[in-house]
Image (cartoon, rainbow, N blue to C red; front, top):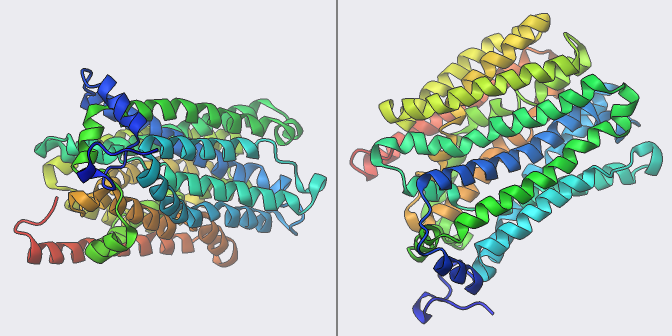
Length: 453
């Protein structure tokens, strides 16, 4: 049975009796901003690791194992990328389902179910037989597990990034906003290292038979660690206080759209340049190198690890820069740099191994500057009561529009019309971000003196 702290709060708190008991136990042990930051990074790293393990396998494994019936490798990879996109379609549905679980049974229950679904879906892929063994059941099961990943990722939205932002000093908001984004380069680097190790050290037959499966097992273990790191903060006094103030409590989606519908729509387009570029420097270039050459997949994966480390540094730089010039201006500069990069990106990918290496390292550096503030841009537009649900919905839409179909569209355009068209895809995302930022500036100038950060 769910009990509220008092009758007047019943229906407003997203907290079970067990969670409130846990907060009483931790009442004399306040959680510092540093502990919250570590929990946020571990949680995001686990989520991104799961998704990148799948993304890398969608290039290196599934076209040959699951879609071996395709007439050629390019078509097989396009099929694989189509299944890759399913998670981004399932994510908003998962958000709705798990917000109901959150409101009925508490944030801890929601996170436990979501992360076990995420880890379980990822680990299940490790046991997947190929098309040659079970026929059409192989792509059907892959699609089912991918939908499970997407649904779980919607449920993994925990509000900890918002809790971190609530603890941010006024002059450090940009720095605090970039902390959750550090999980992406960490997760990608770890996934690339694992796949790179097996690709380089195993024969092709052994890798395709069993080597590729190990990163999926690791993903489940990382999710267990991430779960405990996040539950510790959910059970903290600070988190409970934020819930009681309705700052991290879920609200009905219809109510959020009625109050903040315009913010949801504009917020979905603000990080579009960053999210469009996200998979164009992580998943797509590996498919291009694998299909059209330039260097081996193993060596390219290690170059991508270097790129992720460069991106890690520029994510941190983005926080320092945003505190000096403002988050909106930082995002605007990032979108302009991405637009400029879009003109050279196709030529770098076509320039052989050195050009591809430059594409990855420069691309990750630019991505970090923009991606570092993408999360803060989404959540900062909502009043405290609607921040949790509004940020979740906006993030789901941003990833769906900006990143969900990026590998599929980029490879389809590049293989059918020429590599030059990925530049057009990138610049379209940059234009959407610039227009959304200009519109938000106009709106803020007419509603709030000085606007929002």
